[in-house]
Image 1 (cartoon, rainbow, N blue to C red):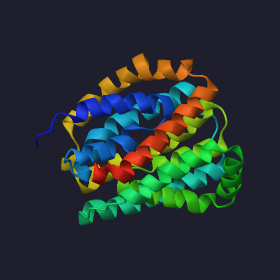
Image 2 (cartoon, rainbow, N blue to C red):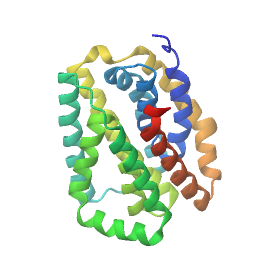
Image 3 (tube, rainbow, N blue to C red):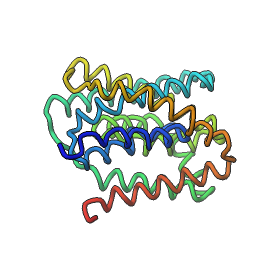
Image 4 (cartoon, one colour):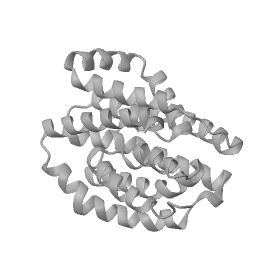
Length: 244
């Protein structure tokens, strides 16, 4: 593979993003590595160890707060969807191209964040239909590894403070990562990569030295703006990558 060793800078770069926003390695690293020629299972094996380690560290250090019973039910529903769809993809080997859907979800998420009225409108409906939302989110993540697009919207409509938003995202991302790792162990253990596990401590180092420092220094307004901009830009890139 011509780009065999480029997975490491990809992980390091998006470790900074995940350090700040609670997501990044999976939602942004997956399309990057797919474009470099890796297959989906190999991408999981390379990215998951770093994602799980950073998510665990974020949740542990911020203590995450108590999880309401209703949210536990939502996480179970989401987890079931991830397990089912990921298992189907791994067993069948089917390649699912959802670039348009993922790109539109990212851009929609950014648009929602730009308007306080729009966000409140979506927030009311997310609360009303949260079971259906987390089900779709889990299914999307199982198929594409990019459920973070919907998770960013879910967390930012439920929470206001940046630490709470990141904790909400990290909680789901830790769940995603553990489920995906266990699914790989059971269904496709050869996809697990020693390189992926060796990259995880480096990703954690980037988290402590760079990403977490930037997170602490960013004001609430700057944090909101950066998250919105990054989601929008990446949505555009996903939509247009076939034409670049």
